[in-house]
Every structure is written in structure tokens, then in C-alpha cells.
Amino acid sequence: MANPNIVNVTSILGTTTYYTPTGTAAVVLLPNAAASGTVFKINQIVAANVNGSAAVDTTVSIYSNGAVAQGGSPSGGTAYPVVSTVSVPADASLIVTDKTTAIYLMEGHSITITSGTASGITYSISYEVIS
Image 1 (cartoon, rainbow, N blue to C red):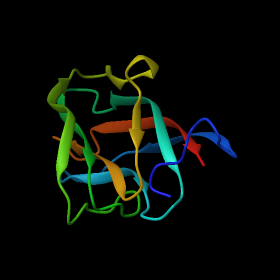
Image 2: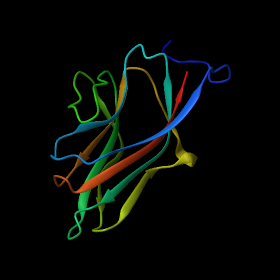
Image 3: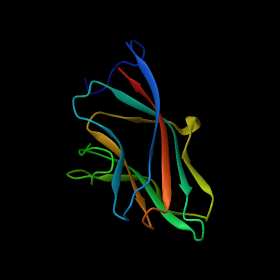
Image 4: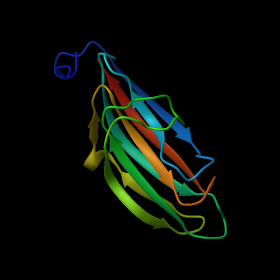
């Protein structure tokens, strides 16, 4: 079930996940495993600069063909940036996307994040699991 009919769903479960990457390479924030039978409606992604002293660059992408566990390195797919190398000032937040610009994350895809400074950005993502 790669693309469930969202009119005839059996469940919609809301959740929020958080992650602070400890490195500067791209990592998975939210995976939707292949053959999960679900689609994720991404309601909000926020990147908060927790560095405290300097701006930190961030990139958030939809990654195809490589849904691995949160914190893992994406592999075997292509990154499609939602925001690319945006500078988040010290002690500030960037709303990457919200309900007015919702994204549907299909099976086998993931949301990946890249921070310009290790442990410099905490990401939060609010989404609905639709099946």
C-alpha cells in the first residue's frame, strides 16, 4: 500500500519527534519504511538553534529510497531539499514547514537533516501517521 486513500483511512495517529544531530553529515529525522502501509502527513518542522553563540546553517530534505532509522545515514536515494543551507541565528528558530505547506511522506522515503555545527540545531517534527 504505497499510497493509502486518505478518505477511507482506518486510523490517523498524531505524534511529535525530536532529534539533535551530533555531527554535520545528513541524518534521518523521520523515516517511513518501505511497505509500511502508511503515509505521513508532515504538519510542522522546526529547527531551533541551541548553539547559543553563533548562527548555524541547516538543510532539511525529503529523501527518496532510503528510509533508515532516525539518526542513521540516508543511503541509496536522492535528497530533495525543502530548505537548503539556511542560516538560523543564535537562540532562534526556523519554521521549515507548517500546516499551510504540509508535506506527504510516502513509503520508503524519509525526512533528512543536516546541521552546519555538531549539536547546534534541535529539530522537532509534528506529523500524522495515516493508514
